[in-house]
Amino acid sequence: MITYPSTNGVFEEQISDVCDLIHKHGGQVYLDGANMNAQVGLCRPGDYGSDVSHLNLHKTFCIPHGGGGPGMGPIGVKSHLAPFLPSHPVIASPHDAHSSPLGTISAAPWGSSAILPISWVYIKMMGGKGLKHASEIAILNANYMAKRLENHYKILFRGSKGYVAHEFILDTRPFKKTANIEAVDVAKRLQDYGFHAPTMSWPVAGTLMIEPTESEDKAELDRFCDAMISIRQEVADIEEGRMDARVNPLKMAPHTLTCLAAPNWDRPYSREVAAFPLPFVKPESKFWPTIARIDDIYGDQHLICTCPPMEIYESPFANQKRASS
Image (cartoon, rainbow, N blue to C red; front, side, top):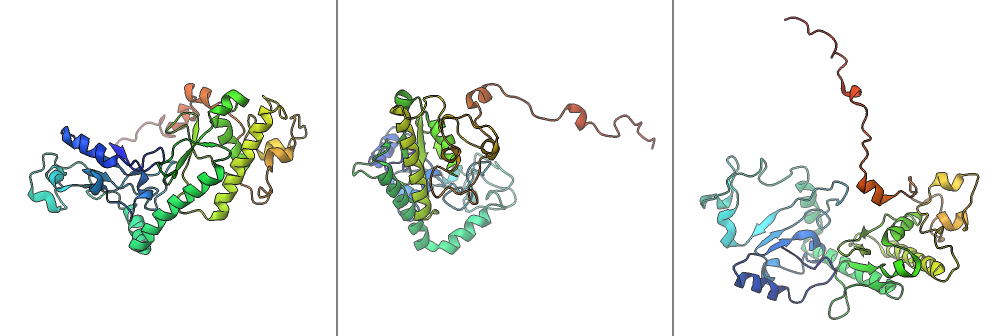
């Protein structure tokens, strides 16, 4: 299975050679459609060697991703694999004339009828030119942000010409040695700037992966970059001794409204630094975090049931004798 461009945020130039090598040894290539946002209108997976291509509807085709977003979408195959596609007893498919050893594998042959119409409408509204333009803007946005941030963070991977694809990875690992700051601290501090953190520690542990897509305007991209640059300055303040190494805005983030409104403030930085670190972060428009810092590792390793007691689930008629028929 391959992802193109790779999850490192690079259009791998040897992709065709890799696919040829797999085919030479009798293998088949399955394309994960996670990064189709950088391909629609620009690439044809079959041309560079994919035998099976999964076109994820989430992200690329207007379906939310994360928080339970459905990982579904059409799967296309090359003609030599058509005889192995599943069949359906009610709705006929063009390939049903061929023998299908798999038979039926799902109740709905075309996927979710609740989701597919959304993507269909999006595709019809955008048209071929619009879909291609969306891919181009997604790539442009990522490269714009990478350029703005490259003097403050190391961009972990780039293509041979110095560009990234539609996403890129910021390396925050050096901060562990210089300031005892980790990716999770940066992620939680972003909440104080009004941003939900990007993908953390994937695909490289201790890093942040930024994927702006085509949906955000330049003003929003600049706000995010300004926040990341400001956070880098906060890391520098720790590195150079201007902020305490243990009690600082990053280690104590995020700062909730309850925390800010408490009568006693015993931290060595101001409430303004905690909750309103840049001019665009305003109390009337800020997206406030509702929960302060938690111990993520402890929580992952010690599951706690927060379900109601079992008595709650008992029927109110459980103790009554069933009426005789």
